[in-house]
Length: 260
Image (cartoon, rainbow, N blue to C red; front, side, top):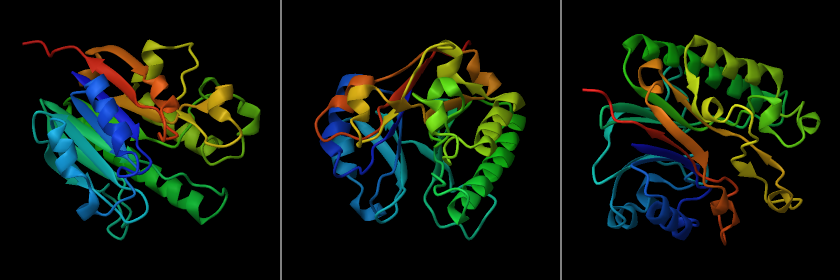
């Protein structure tokens, strides 16, 4: 089973990129973030024509998440992260697909920090941590995939010294990500590439792509009951060089078949 995550940065404006990538990479499951479209403008027909069932939770102009499944319809298990009934931002969507619970998330950016946006980010991470603990207690295969807007370590950024005060790299968010892994969640990309500089994001500005001045913001956290099935992981880096593409490249993992 191949599971991918892709911050598409506008699902309608990047639709040709998305459809080309789906055809070439052929993931079994794809988590999308930053749809930047209300529900009624999600390109369901085009995605279905490409062979994928889809669920989505859009939002006008900002945010928005979707889960695609090849040849089947994902079974929705949750819309929205629990813990704040007043939170109207579309940032979490969850579905059961082929025996795996897949959570697609788009964690807040948090800049400028400090400030209200950073405070919201920290509250969102706390809610995620509480819910992630509940998921671990279920002892079932869970994959939490998406744009975490967190740079976990110095190895995940081209020049760490330039990012120390950024909301993506402040100690509070790095410690929160580390705490998730200490609870038992497995960082899939780093597990299989412990010493490699893997980036999933290159800014549009200052020739970041040309200089390979990247960040690793898109992650897969695996529950212990599925982590032992991890067989491969990587980044579809060339996609970032396509015409009119997102500033993110898709990341992916492969899971071996479950025993029995």
